[in-house]
Image (cartoon, rainbow, N blue to C red):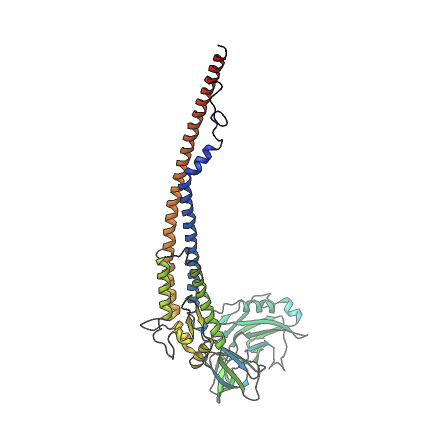
Length: 472
């Protein structure tokens, strides 16, 4: 046979990318492992997202354990120039009638040497005397505030402002304290002291102040020729309690014009003296209560929507999901024990479950009728803490969701952890498979390189033989 041994392309005639093609076949197992890993990672992410949504529902349940969430009230005053009003969850829907005959005032004293009151203030300290400051070697200044004694560390050279600053800097403990300042009337400078808390320290049965909050117990301050003694701190306002008539009951007193201990759950701000009774109206805020309940329903439905979106994929056939949903729904349908009222379960308040989607909704008409009949039942269903039996729904859900989402023992994090372990195993498999494929590629490369050399040699031999034959 004349010529050389024929192959396709190169010496062997094999395709240049033959090894790559063979490796693609070898990679089929790796591709399956990687696809499995991707699906597992996606599933783990879905469980982590569900855990996050369950934690949001748990946080909502914790917030709703506060009874103030469930019994909001609206409050109004017939004359807000005289009285304004706010009502807390502890209030009861009702009308109250209030008359104000006296406002609470703050006990105040002013320096007035030889003075009697603000209309006859006597003399103060001249500008020149105050600029020089205290001239006595051992000035003294002590006073009582709410029955406790205080000492002002006055020193030679102190001005009235220095003394005021030292009064303001005293430690009054849990008391509101005394505020001190200096005023100038155009001729004299005068030290002024005022109790920060209004009203009397004590009063008699007729409402008269029997002891003011501030009393000077000792004072010897010399500003040159001007000497200030205790008697020179004249009382400009004794400090009195506010006086009211509430729902026909006369002689109701308050040390403050912010009154929060006369009508349960109601805070009144007294602003002026009334000439007739002011009507204060407290009503149950059904719309606000419904908004709170809707917030809970929306958070719950967010969990259900997410689970439904994964039913045919990442959550398909997952016992953990079925178990979690079953436990949550059981709590929703479990009556709260010890409820004082007409209703003990959400279904009685118009909260309904869609049989197909599992989502909650509120029947507005049924809800409105229920809270109109028994406003407090909604609060009790969520927040009741009986001595025995089923606690309120907010407490039960918090406990359940804490168990489901606990990072160490929770059902949902446990599933995520299991998937994480599977991912680690798949990563190991991928690493091993990549190492195997690397060895396969080396073997194939060596094998076909040797084949190339053999064919090249054969071709050379064939050429030599052909040449020899042609010379015969």
